[in-house]
Length: 332
Image 1: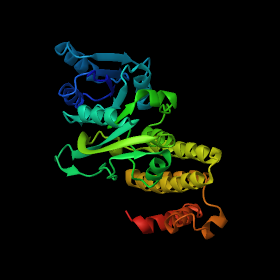
Image 2: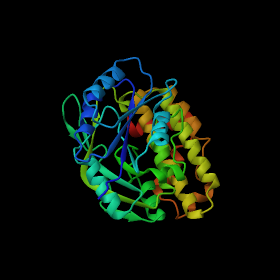
Image 3: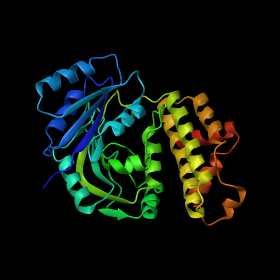
Image 4: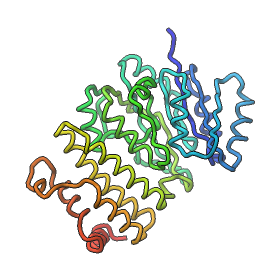
């Protein structure tokens, strides 16, 4: 049996403390027909030197290095991976994480047997300093296989579909055919690309086994969010709004609107947790008030939940009042 080639795409940027463990987890795969595509995003640490030395010690492996012309960010790096991948499937792996030894073999076996466009595994999240395990990215779906875009999108807007772009084995032709590229310049690129994928995805399998190890550490983006990330969230919400405006199906249009409202609510909370900066919170709150929200008549409709109506109401108050109520709800 000819096993399909799988491209594992890894960004190389300021990861000198983690990259060797990441690469070793790839080398340890029980699945051997791999293309390991490394994209150098021109950091100023020793990451690439470590990578090049590692490759010299493992000449028998299928490593390929691509260098960006300038530092371009993770979205561009992942697009380079998509454009240069030779595999039937592509798998995005962040350079500070690892995959389990049987990750690719299990995912390929399911993808080939079930003929699906994507396979998602389960994630083990570990705090690097204490080795404490958490369920930060645990799968919320128990079904093994889902077919039909309506059901898949329903699960996505309900928050049950995994948003991260890593830990997914994806049919490369599916990404290219639907132009599911990452938007350059965005730091929080996964939420948008996953949303746009959910709009067209027709088949997916979920693997409850742990296939990915996500490490939480002081360098993690989740701990280092700044105004540029808040600006990205605003941009993403604006793009969601464009999809909302052009959607013709009335049921899906309502789903997207409710999703936008949930997204505003979530990112306003993450904004505050990251900075606890009143000015920056109000800045985002004001920007979100200009993005699609419920009309007055929608408050009397049964097509939106009470929770969605409540969130929408609290997102559209005079800014000072909205901030006071937010602080009362969530405290410090």
